[in-house]
Image (cartoon, rainbow, N blue to C red; front, side):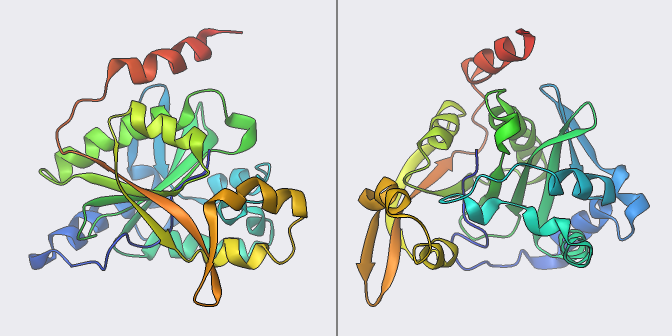
Length: 246
């Protein structure tokens, strides 16, 4: 269930005093062995920092393809690009990059910009096809959000998502997010793929596209979740029943 856009919702404003930098250093780690020092457990998942083992697992994930291809991690199958990606994920500030694992199996991933002026900005919310239908997205965010709110009190959680990602939107709404804005924005990965996708693929997302100022734009939604709002129990009830079923 991929959704969200990389980068920032709005231009970031660093938090003064270096507090965020020190906190990130405390749990991010600079070497592979240190990546195991951070483990956030809840709802049947453990959220971990990227490491070599997880990169290898994510490289084997099935690809979603168009129009969700920007979230696919097939490039990790190239050893050189995999090493470069791991280095970026370990050191890129002010972002925190996590992988959701279920009994040591990578089942999803999420990143968060800790310094976005709009709030704690989630992006690259991604569950590969083979792990969909198990409530991974809901469980992953239901584990992460309360922890973020303790670490960064008073800040709302925000994200953006292309309007055609309706399945992801149902998960966000169930977790207490509300749609706060609609906007048209340029999505480079999507715009580039429109030149090579099939007519059938383009037709599927045509209602969400427009050609403006010489380029393709996609309609996107902004979602926000007020700080301190409890995770609704109903948001996880369905995913728990799915996990128990054979």
